[in-house]
Image (tube, rainbow, N blue to C red):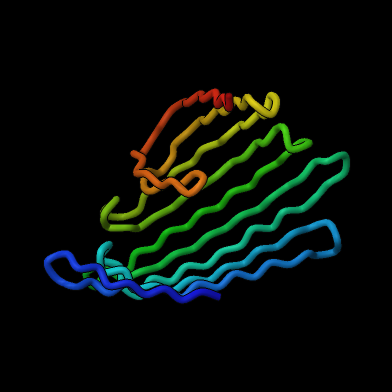
Length: 169
């Protein structure tokens, strides 16, 4: 469990606060389950009464295969209106080398849409060896903050096909 509070002084003081709790366990010796719950007040994003929850269930199959199911839900108030975000993802993996996933997002965030908006996409991630990795994305991806190895940056909405080759030299 974690509690965070920060005062941001930008022409006036914005008081950010957040409670976060995560629980992880092993189920039947072949599945990992992680559950989280989060409550925050984020005046810089104009989000009050933000509540988020979700889970990740990772099930080991035979021959080093696996299947993971993830779901996240978020609701918050902005300018007196309720906004909701949902994410669902299913991932199949083979020997920690090949990952295939399908994800679906749905949002009523008034900063993004006047009614609701949906994103559907799929990833194929192939680890060629310890130094090279090939990624293929098909579909639509929601923009917003993205983080990798502790470095965060803003991304734009994306639609169509993306191919990446990652090389660690």
